[in-house]
Image 1 (cartoon, rainbow, N blue to C red):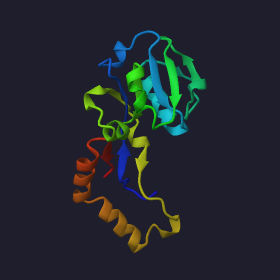
Image 2 (tube, rainbow, N blue to C red; image 1 turned 60 degrees about the vertical axis):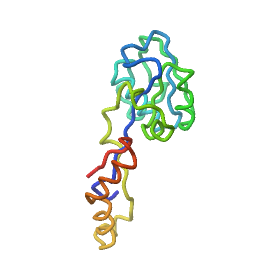
Image 3 (cartoon, rainbow, N blue to C red; image 1 turned 90 degrees about the vertical axis):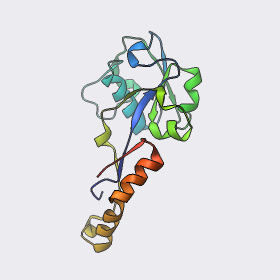
Length: 164
């Protein structure tokens, strides 16, 4: 992947009922995406917030890797596009912020944000032998300009953070 990255995807937990993860009650229901990378981010976020404990050796965890769940949370695994629509029916959901913004959900529903932003860069993948080509350098130059930074911030309203 060419560097610097174009942007990073913000991932968080959102709730219509609670203002922080510490308010989530015993037996709370949390919707998370079922695809592997977003499920991993959701579970790592839940561990970051002290809601669950995962096996130490696993880099891309699934719900099978939960070793402690002190609040007996119920975890709903849904298609990533369905997680946000489940918000009225659950206590919280963990998803990419772009789904919150694109569905016009108030940003004050955000109760926490993952600390793994730098692990999920988005950019251009090319054949490594072409990395030094003028067109590749021009591409990165165009996409890492001050104008592009302003556009990322304007268009995506905080769901993407410029990577340069």
